[in-house]
Length: 429
Image (cartoon, rainbow, N blue to C red; front, side):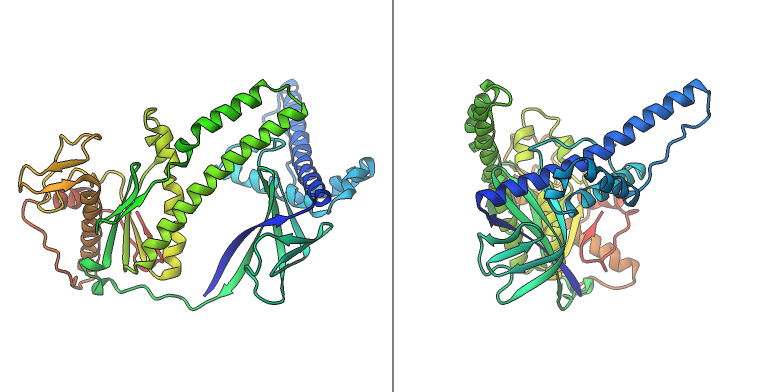
């Protein structure tokens, strides 16, 4: 099994290297905006001609990155400063523009937008690129020391096909992929999975996650804890004169805090995902959340976005695939918090502020989040039982489906038509 492992390591650069990195990012941005602006002007000119001569279609040829690069080479004669950086900067940027148009025409993204200075500054390099234990060797830039030593290469150096250099705040990073040939992990057969092998995980705001076993993961609430500092630094930026040196310094201070908030979030997400995977369950079940819709509640919007639900899902996907664990995502409309995890009775009067509640049918007192995690565990058992009944096999489990269980009735009526593939590394509905 070939696994692509991505790395992002901070560069320890001097002032001259920092200036060269900034210039490379600027020329990469210039090439992207230059071609995009030219295409827009050509389209508008042809549109006017089509209206003037009443043509049924607008005569316009988009071209591709190879055609655009030929024009970019001729532009270097007019602007010699373009040659001060690696030729890869402009060339790879034009390829990014071509990809952006492909995504637009396949309706997977919006129309390409102009890049702004200071917003996701980066450039991609190809050719003679080497990564060693304590340095990276890049075209034009030469050898640059790494802040993390002996990572990821212990001895010697590794040749790469390409690498991306990007800026976050006032720090520069190099990103690259390494192919690793590893033994593919075996997924546990569905017929051998029991209740104790399934881990339900309920995501939340107060606690980042709570498992069906009662383990809670703290939510650092990085944005909320740094909100006052962000507001103060933002005021400092707005009060500075545009284009002044003091404004640039204020923007740098603000961007450092934003980076710190992002780092705290990523750290919490990776620790959560690693802890769940290291528990070695055979199946992990999480709920399908839509943060974009949930954030329409303005009272909870900042807290919901601060919890990084999408990042948790994406991180669990690849960590579960590496560990050979089934990842199941329960449907959005499965109200895991409202059902009693013991008898299956639905508590329709449950409010968002109710952190604990007692079942009116069986009298069991529930913690809201733990109960939701157990109901996610129940969903996985039902799904596997359905899958095995369809394949004429029997589920080896101690789970019993009680008569009158409203969860079972809901799942049978609403989810029976859903298709589920258990032969994949992760399973999503």
